[in-house]
Image 1: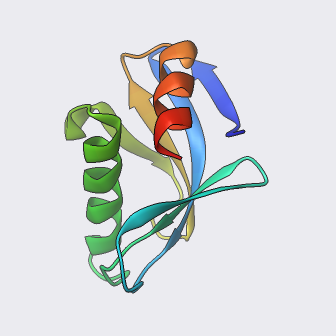
Image 2: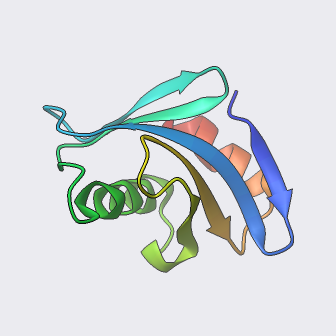
Length: 97
């Protein structure tokens, strides 16, 4: 199960990205962290943009509703989903992960 944290303006959770993968996909959950494979390299924010685009598409929410709260330059990031409750995010992520 993904470790979700409710905050004043949304819900945050950790993501571990693997850039330069052969396929862009959500590859599961490990130790409470959502694992995401990306084809983009970790250069000039390309991997961060692809991570947000992928999660936006899979979760069926707008890209503007997902923010990188911390770890923009690291493989392990904390993402924040704005405007949703912890129950809504849990339901969405359990369906896609």
